[in-house]
Image 1 (cartoon, rainbow, N blue to C red):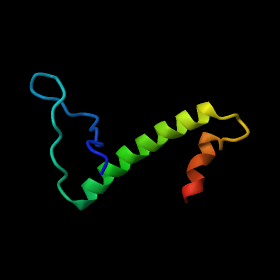
Image 2: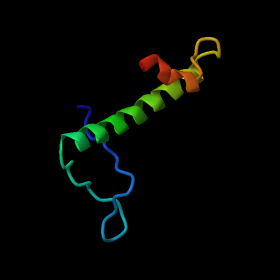
Image 3: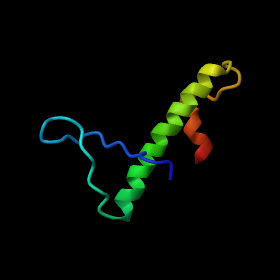
Image 4: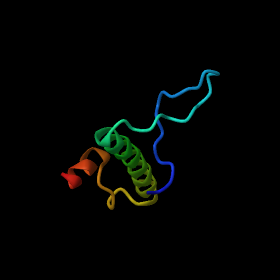
Length: 69
């Protein structure tokens, strides 16, 4: 994998700061966590790509996901 790609939204330590997330409880949770992290990373790359291209070269965000179904 690409290192530490899972960033849970609501994990805090007793002191209020961030803590290490508990390991996934099973295969399904593992896949869901990685799918979320990968989707966020892809969205960030797409935004960068879209900013660097003209409007004519870029698929509108609302239609982007349709290319994968």
